[in-house]
Image (cartoon, rainbow, N blue to C red; front, side, top):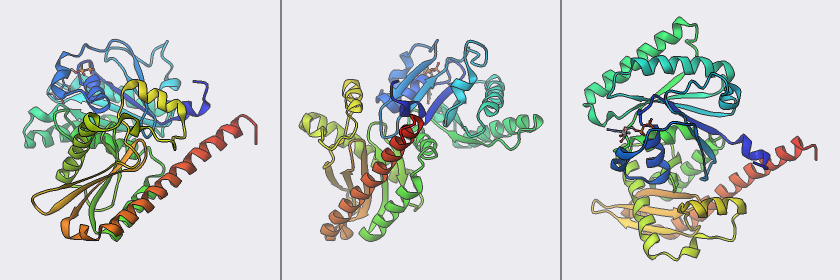
Length: 348
Ligand code: GDP
């Protein structure tokens, strides 16, 4: 709170009706809770504001469904004023008419306060729906809300829709897309990944936030769900193995630039990659899965053909260059933030 930069972090707001799945999403994505254990979560009755210390610092604001956050004492400017995204969760297994009213009301009010907010609709719990029914539901929801907004002269407000479930990777995929929009360095990261892939014979590369398994960038070849799933599963395997066999102090690296984050992270028991973490898995179809630690939060996971891995000296060298480039990108970000802070304080 003393740090003015902290108040300018991109913010994720999670909203939706009671029992739509907000707490479950948060637990599964950010706290590694197994999906079936969410059955026993208690309903949220207050605004839960949680800082998540991860590669980007974002906040999850869990609003219990029944609170009308536009009434006093909730200050709409305070809630929606910051740069960030509003995630609205709709339970697709339930009657969603009431949820759509709520969504419309929320978007209208939030847009007035902050037209730059991105609006993301999670059509959630779709695990129980057939593929055909999923598409129909999405079409129906999209149509109704678009019509409703158009009736109120708000057709220019753009909403994004995702079909999600905590029982598969779809929730991580959706979060990845939402968060990528909040990362100003995204084009640079994608560019670096493209260069890395082109020069190392890599087929697909994801830059993951290890704690949440959200990928914050990937190269520009199309993402297929299977490659994403296998890369994300690899992170689980490596985290499990290093929790059992790894040296705990190897997660601590002298190059940390922000000691306050170490405390925050250490106490929440989150995993951090060692900068030099490295792992290789050969699949029986001749593909290699390769993981490299990039910094304390990020890891690179790549898929490549085994014969391309023969020149792995070159690949190692390219990884090293990539890692240095990433460090530079974020060093620049830190320096800019510091500069902005000094400017605000009138020091320069
Ligand atoms: P909240 O009140 O919005 O925070 O809702 P909860 O997170 O407490 O979730 C309500 C119920 O929905 C729980 O019993 C969850 O297990 C269930 N749930 C959450 N996400 C999913 C999902 O993706 N699929 C299914 N089938 N159930 C879900």
